[in-house]
Length: 444
Image 1 (cartoon, rainbow, N blue to C red):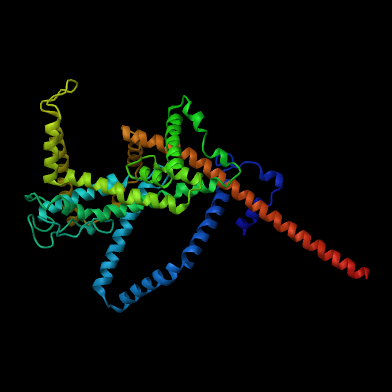
Image 2 (image 1 turned 120 degrees about the vertical axis):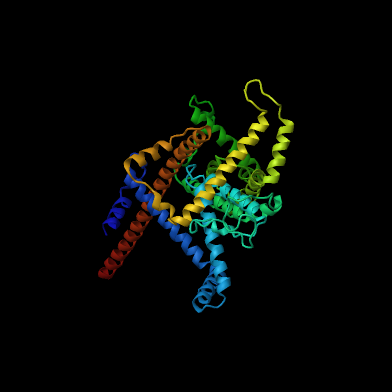
């Protein structure tokens, strides 16, 4: 009740106070209150839309009910178990994709942490099993099991320390991992929706003109971060306004670390949602992941990797004047790549052995002691060009995100105030009308 009363008090402030800007830094509690009210209303609307949609009513609900009935009665046990396995697997990889792109540039790099190592695991297991006769779905959060060759194969079940042949061909490995990569790509597309909606909502506020900084002023700024942000924004503005769907498709079809800005710009110009999301889904879930899978399968699959390295040795010079090496650069790259893949293979073998001896979950190894927490915090400091770039993007987009939050909260506060005033005016009119009718009755 206290929350409700405070909300009513906030909404019933005098009209002149509604124009006062509320910001996350000056009035954080009030800003977060109105932001929460707006988010709650949006979630309620979305849930109502989803559960009342004909597809949900006539397709999804009967399918879920039939699946639950089959599981309870025991009929089709193999089919329902397969459906459950694929549902969990899809949830895992789509969730990792969302984590990779959500958060205005601060998302977890699940491609580097999970997808690309998964492709390497599949390529190595294919060499050991001399085929793809293993279930790759065991590589998920609910299973720490290594891949097992279903019909034997070199190395035996899960024994990756044995000798491995060249394994299956390039396209066999590609087909084994492409579904996983596309699920991850769909997740990355879904993760781009929040910046779009935040920006879309912010442009409904009176302060929407301040949501996107002046590009011309930013390009002339002496601040490197502000100038870099303005250049990226100017390029996206040009592509989106000039090319529309195709512009978003191009921006989403390659590893674009600043794609959050694309969602922000599309929302700012009120591009239709399905136009934005369709282009993002095609770019990230189809074109980009296919390019990434082609590259990493070629790098991780032994025969294609050897051909790629032979090609590099043929085109690169035998020496570079500014780089002192004991061997040609291409051969050094070849040796380095093979050493890294070999190290990863030994790590996988060790993890499989550790799992057999002590099958614990990953969160059971988290160390919350002060020294361990300090070491973890130091590891967050950018120590490479890639990490520094990600930090710049995060700071730039966070600045815009804060301005959007302020605008959304301010707009929702003003809408609540207008709604309350309209209700009070209607009540006053009804009271005046009732008093007039009573006065007329006594007059007669």
